[in-house]
Length: 173
Figure 1: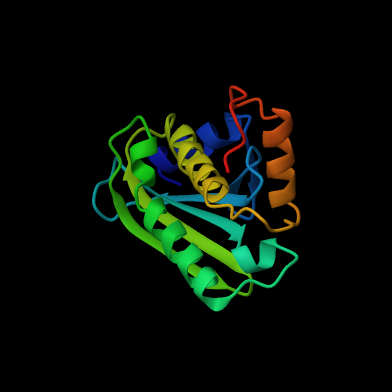
Figure 2: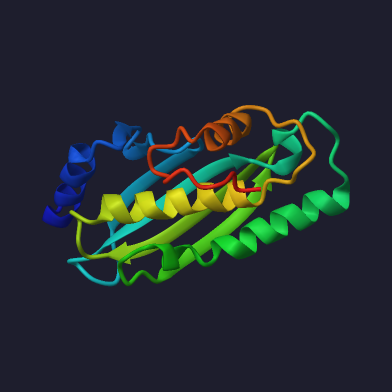
């Protein structure tokens, strides 16, 4: 293992928000499955490539009721378009090498790939992007539906002000 890759491994293992699983790092501070994998970069020996994958339920799989095809398509298209701005939520200069969002079997699977040279800051960068995905998801919640977990839990926490990361403002609907 190269020194930068070993430094990244140590940084993710030290970070209290992550656990190690299957060669990657799972973020435990969001309601959705968020996983980061670090690898060597082809472009520069001192930078690493980070790939963050976040899995959320689609609107149709998050609710009890039926969702019409136009709303399903519009919801996903809007979600995808808004997530392209995720690097703006990070206090570092991040350029995405790759971004994709797809729907598969009731899941919206979003992937971000970026190169970054500071392995100590990389866990916080990936965490900020994953939290941006969660926040964007919550902002896209459509009123009038009965939501299933984990979305119903996000809404409940927002109503009760139980999210330690949030200052207790109004419910994001």
